[in-house]
Image 1 (tube, helix red, strand yellow):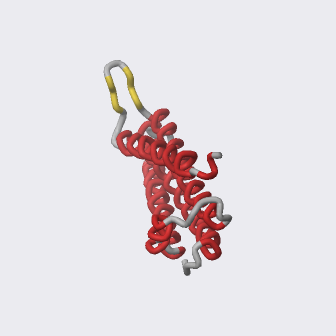
Image 2 (tube, one colour):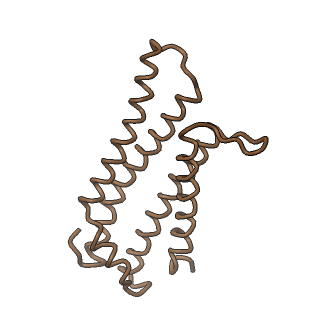
Image 3 (tube, rainbow, N blue to C red):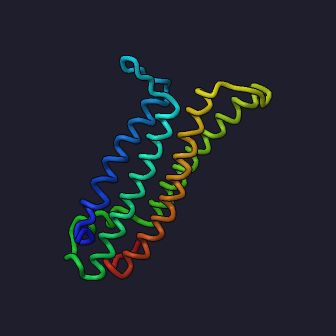
Length: 164
């Protein structure tokens, strides 16, 4: 049963999706990429952002599942999980989430200011989307990080007997 191995069900696919998605968003942030006759642009950036969001979500599921499985005594306690919680605290998770949201709002405000500079008229789609995709992606990841932090803190209270 895959619940006994959340690293294969959630963590590995999550890390792979996050890696490729994150690299794709960052690479396309500076402009289109042309490989032979193929142009990677805004549409590719949207797919990369989706991969990043899904990957982070899978990682959160994986960590949550691992903690639940330990608490339900489906799998043995794990030193790696204890090490994670010796570093992770609710406060650090909230701070990371707020930093992600702030970074996202920075990109969104940058797009808004560029639109304002054009008197709220037409602006370059390609330039605008390069601000809006990272902005919305970072905002989504920030909100997800905040609520995942609360959820992990609740799960860890019983499972690990740690203060988070």
